[in-house]
Structure formats: structure tokens, C-alpha cells
Amino acid sequence: GAVVSQHPSWVICKSGTSVKIECRSLDFQATTMFWYRQFPKQSLMLMATSNEGSKATYEQGVEKDKFLINHASLTLSTLTVTSAHPEDSSFYICSAVDLGRVLHTQYFGPGTRLTVL
Amino acid sequence: GIQVEQSPPDLILQEGANSTLRCNFSDSVNNLQWFHQNPWGQLINLFYIPSGTKQNGRLSATTVATERYSLLYISSSQTTDSGVYFCAVGSGGGADGLTFGKGTHLIIQP
Image (cartoon, rainbow over all chains, first blue to last red):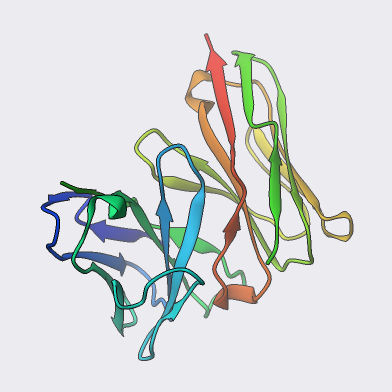
């Protein structure tokens, strides 16, 4: 149980285009999802917290107009990178929490590798 | 925010050896997880351990919350144990994102 999927697993796009990444909890309801970014050979950095039915909360330094997050249902959150540029190339990973469980373990998706040309 | 330090940053061992990875954190936490990131980037949950001791096969973990550190033990290492091990902490229950350490890059040689 507690499986999180992401789509697509990788994407290559041209500079200036927008890219949408989906994060789904497959076998549980996730009232809260998180988006992280990982640059090569570095650690994961929290970008934003996504709560179902409300606006996302962004970490300091993360542009909310550039990284649009929508958590429209208890099993789906989307991250849209708008007007992507080469510096946005990174590994984007989502996680989900089932707050109905006693242990608030975060379960991570497999990640999406974004390359902006 | 909470600071997380992991040591050592790199570790090279022979197959069959035992290892201890350490995670220090700067403030009280109510969530601590250990992960293994495989070569494809997938984070594999190893332990949810904000306090106490847990064991799962060749792996075990101990968190001493009052002294703000956690240890991950790997016994009888195998080449498949290679990869990056991350410690991540949170202080807001399930509603807060995790702060990750920089990881320990473990290489197990045959």
C-alpha cells in the first residue's frame, strides 16, 4: 500500500513553454501533498505544500507564479512549470501523506526529470 | 528552520562489512524518516522513526530525540545497498514538509 505515481517520468521541452507534472496517490487519500526539487548530486529541497481544496503554501524563494500548484482532489496534485527556462531543469519529486493514519509517513513518487533546452 | 547534518558524506566498503550512518538535527522533531535513493532517483522508505529503535532485516535505526540524532545501521552489506541515504525531519506532524540532510553516498564493492 501507499503508492504514489508521477507522470511523466521525464520530459524535454523548449525554453518558454509550460510543463505540467501530475502526482497521484493510488491507494490512499492524500489531504496533503508536497513538491520537492533536486538538482544533480544535491539534496531534496521543499518547494511547496499542497492541501486539497486550498491554495498551496510556497517556501521562501520559490516563485508561486512560476510554479503553479493545483490540488483539486484527494488523490491528485499537479505542478505546472510556466515559461520554463534551462535553469528550471531539475528532478521534481512529489510526496503524499495520509493524515488518516497514525503515522504521518511521507510516501514519495518516482520523480519527474525535466530538461529545458 | 531545522538544520540536518549527515555523516559521513561518502563511505566505501567491501561487501559483507557493517556500517553506521549518522543524522544530527538542530531542533525537536516529530517526524524523522530514512530513505535510500536508488540510481533512478526513487526514494525508498526505510524507516519512520522520530524516536526509538526499529529493525527490518539487515537494517536497523535508532533515534535519540532528546539528544537530537539518529543512526542507521546496515549489516552484512551487499552491492545492492549502494546509493545515497537521506535522513529527513519535520516538526509539524504530517502537515509539514521534510527538511533533508545532504545524504551519505554509500558504495559497496564486491
